Image (cartoon, rainbow, N blue to C red; front, side, top):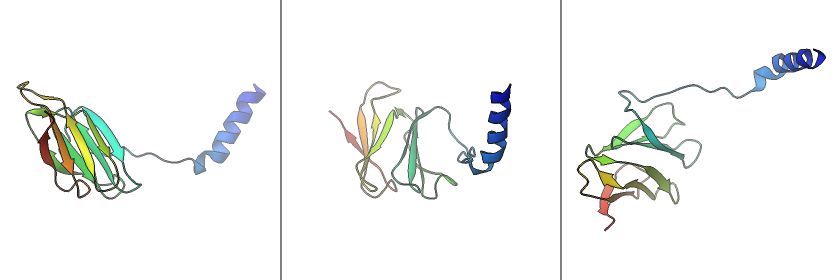
Amino acid sequence: MKTLSLFCSLLLFFGEGVAQWELRYPENRPAQVSSVLFTNPQQGYFTTYSGFIFVTFDSGITWSRRLHVSRDIFYQVAFADSDYGLAYSPYSYLHDSEYVFVTTDGGKQWTARSSA
């Protein structure tokens, strides 16, 4: 019982210094996020199984849709640095393509490149 009281007291005392999380979504958010990546504290990306790539430049306060390929499924987003990145689409809903989408400007524009 003393341990529980001590724990609760410490929790109340130090609770103010604990980082706070806030749930944020982009407007008209798509379902099924497949990958999330931040290249620095301000710049982040997420992809979806429904063919969307979103980007934030303000630590996730706002999100902008940068690409929507309605027939493709994105599994992962990766960046070598803050400018050069890839989003991998292993197949489309039509099962006829495999693409890597490339950005060289920090996610502002994306270009499809066939992986075959």
